[in-house]
Amino acid sequence: MNLPLDTLFDTDELAAEGPAVAALNHQDIVVALSAALAPKRVAVLHMLYPRTDARTHRSLDTLVDVLRGHGLHEVASLIAQEAHYLVFKDPAKAWKAFHEIRNDSLAIGVHLYYNGLVGEAAEVSLDAHAHGRS
Image 1 (cartoon, rainbow, N blue to C red):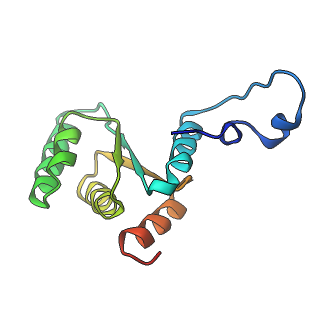
Image 2 (cartoon, helix red, strand yellow):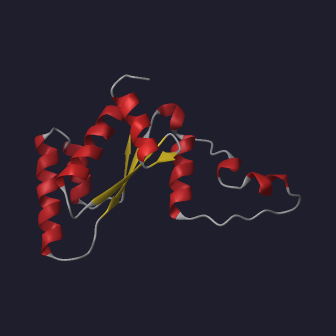
């Protein structure tokens, strides 16, 4: 995988002479990864597991059971292990997993990164690819 340098630096920084430095946050890094993987239609789900109480663990166990019930065994196993990032090569499976996670768990959060996009724009793009509309 070749990550283009300009995905990490502001375009004004690239024009400047001498060494350049950029401040990056977590989202910048995942968006750049997602953009670099866009030709392969790779989706990245960032999982958020709050450390609260027993309700979180019950919600996690319920979500794992639901995912297994929908045939997403690998996803269920990774979530049971509290994996922080799930990377999908299949847009349809990513779409299904994203919606199962988002709709079946109040305690576990998920952010979608796809085609260098995040949020609603990523959802629209993933939906189109997952359902053969693009």
